[in-house]
Image (cartoon, rainbow over all chains, first blue to last red; front, side):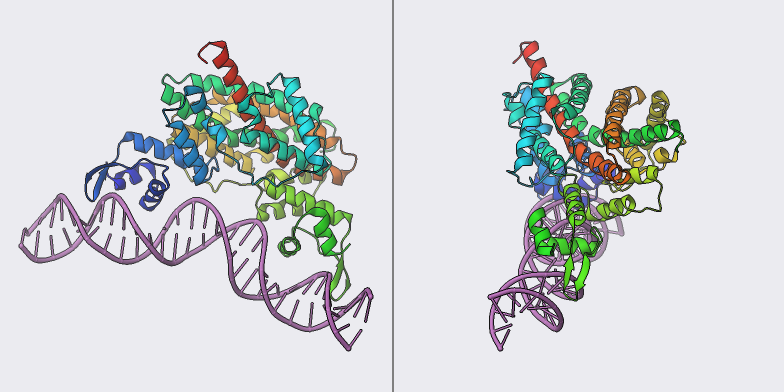
Length: 217
Length: 217
DNA sequence: TCCTTCGGATAGTGCCACTATCCAAGCATG
DNA sequence: CATGCTTGGATAGTGGCACTATCCGAAGGA
């Protein structure tokens, strides 16, 4: 199909598709003449994924490029490619920190990993962007004086472990290796807003229940 | 204290504090002369909260203004003020949608609420921004062909309900009403990156375990 | 007195995700 | 073959956002 058709079927403006091509989020089409290129279903599928990552997942264009590059890099082993989504989302410009709160955060998180039985030496954990984000977020909580010690974090860690099992099952349900990689990216990122929204709704539900229960609501 | 001291103690540049004052994220200080104003510990605390919301929580300045306005609006009842954080974070510019995927999302989410025993008529749920975000996110998953039916969503809903109980306990542990409101805002927003980071780390841990377990490296 | 500091106002910066315009090379029709 | 529309690539511009740099007159301090 032509670029115009790719645009029509995906709902993405041609100008935006050209931008994505320039930025390397999409492989160039097969050149069929000096001024024409041919795109296939793979391009359409990739385009839809990229759009969802950016619009729904809130991923930046630069991060999306990292993600898709890792996901389609066949020189990496399957396990590494599955982790692609995890390794490309800072989302936080690291508000620095070498104060007491940062130290408390380090301590709380180290204790948390121990309590969860997660290996703190594992490179996938200690060196990951998510680990930095976790430290920064916990430090921010500490700076505001809110409880965020190991015991406070534990329920969140348990819940994360539980969800991860569900997530992995969904990913591994995909029949092909490439399908699993794409699923890992899509499900990791797109279930984030789902989870956060559900948490907020659960807050409303739980708060309303308690208000009703104690007769003050 | 003067604006300069407020800046020094919070680590926020004076120009940025002025900007926040202009945008209504911070109450003006007590005017002590035509060119001087006095700020107190309350301003410092509020400033730290706003900074954390924006830098760590990724909240926009406009949304932060909504949140703090609702949180300090004494004309609202306690329950409504506690919900302030829930009501001010679109984070997603609503990618439209009245297609089959949107319909499937509506159906799956309705079923989910039923299975969780949440009241779909409750205004705090059905009318909340989080509900829209949830529908949009599920629709995006459906558009990509990933499983997101009621049964698939159920584990995430259960986990959200579980976390909400923990969250509410933390909020209600605050002794004062104002403290609870601020805690609701801070903990709702700042535990989001904590939860998402932990989920990513759990992915890495779980994936590595499975890879070790089945001997494929 | 003189010099710094204060707070308020205004305009500008840098980044990001597009988006509008232009261009030359096809292709399609009479 | 002429004509006009379409295509894909290149370039520059737009709008939004979160600051940030500069200027100003008034106040305070040595």
